[in-house]
Image (cartoon, rainbow, N blue to C red; front, side, top):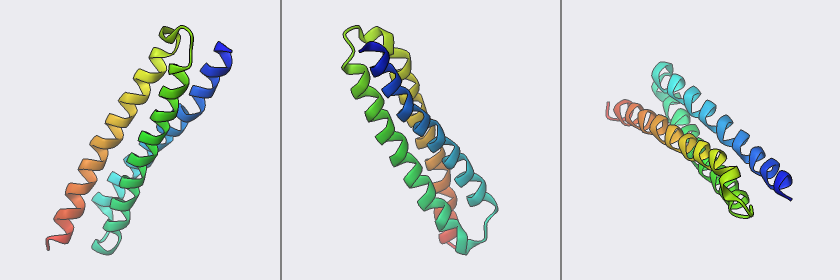
Length: 103
C-alpha cells in the first residue's frame, strides 16, 4: 500500500512541475508579447498557479494516507515549493500585465 500511495503522489507532483514550466513560459510571453497578447500570459499564469495548487492538494492527500508519513514528506515539501514558485512567477506576470494595461 505504501508504494502505491507514493506512486499516486508522484503523478500530481509531475503536474505541479509542469505547471511551473507553464508559469515560466507565461513570464517570457508577458515580457515579449505585444499588449494584445499580454493578457493571455496573465491567464496562463493564473491557470498555472491553480494547477500547481490542485496538484499539491493531491500530493498531500496521498501522503496523509501513508501509515508512515515521513516516507512522503519530501514529496509534500516539493509540492509546496512548486506552488510557491508558480505563485512567484504568477506575481511577476501580474505586474507585467498590469503595467501593459496601464498604458
